[in-house]
Image (tube, rainbow, N blue to C red; front, side, top):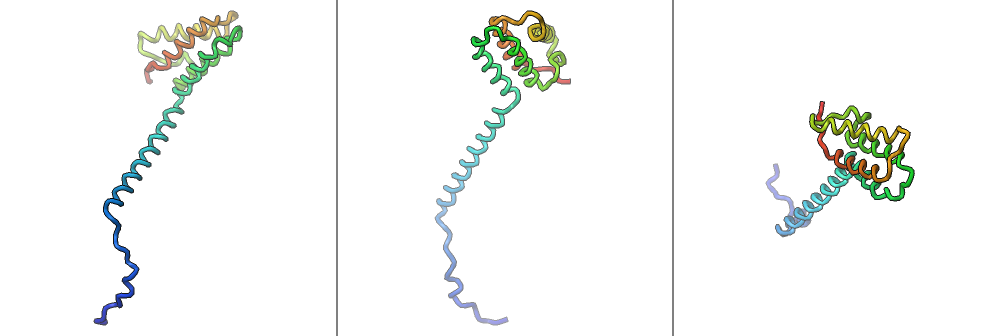
Length: 145
């Protein structure tokens, strides 16, 4: 092994480390950007949940209700679609709630089915009541199997 040290010219390119405060400021900035990005994507995720989408459709239908003079039957079908989407079920009768709510739910579904498929369509005030009840039912917790 040679006893000579390398020349000092090779060490000229070394840059001293930056001020410690500059490193801390950039870490705070990166943390802040990551937190904002996380909250943004969390908001998008929560906004696009099926239950939230169905509730937005029901509220929009409630706002558009005065324009539905004699065309309430398609609106009833939209309510059933929103409820099926809310509970991720194909059949409304298959949805189960606690015992005290189950009888009320079955009556509601029977009334909704009668307005969808019966000879007499729902009146506008009755349809408004059905949509408001659908908003309440969409918040209810169902019994899981």
